[in-house]
Image (cartoon, rainbow, N blue to C red; front, side):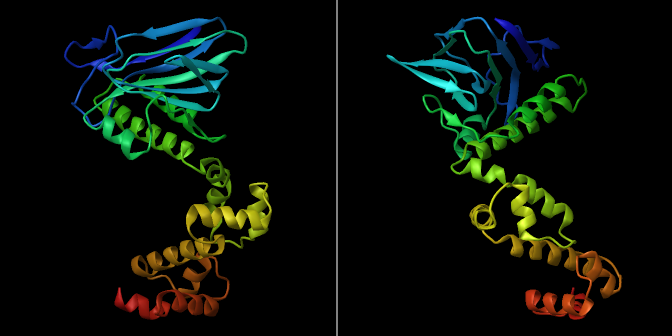
Length: 283
């Protein structure tokens, strides 16, 4: 087949790896039984006529996976996310040609089915299409890294990492996800530099968008304009500093991105209905 990365959950009763990882458990809300990566250049077929006791999540990063569905075959090209439910037969194959790479995880838990429903992750024959430049591979890598640990926190960490993976998959495959993920760089920039002068054309340039397109997508994703988002961050910083420190208001204004303390006070009062001094007295 090629390379086959495999990481197995540990059976606490037997103190060793499962001889197979098709396991149903309700010990945790979410629990990864095993996870790994397949990198194939030769044709192969997987056919599980009995199905698994756990849920099977598969993400194609390169090539095309063929999945039979009755008399038809569904293609799962790069960027596809497939979720096979527990206790249902499944099969898939790779015909060769372009190299196939996919990441996979088998998971169970008392809330496994509920999480899939909450995050809008429909089971096969639905094929989810993930936005480009998503963080799904990084989430898988975090899971692989966690398997190398052998302390009392590892299983809980794996459970938390699985939750993050499912959330990341849900975000990447949600309607409009491709557009939303395009803005991650500029949103990160705003978060880091909100207390400096930020021009909207600069943010649009970060995402390689026109200003009008950027403003449209930002409001669609965040529910507010970029300017309002920057203001909200500055005012949040200001209120925190007013409540938790005795710093002079002029210094707080500067720390929140305002070189003019009077303009800061005017903006703060318009936002909160109280001047910075009044706000400090009542909180």
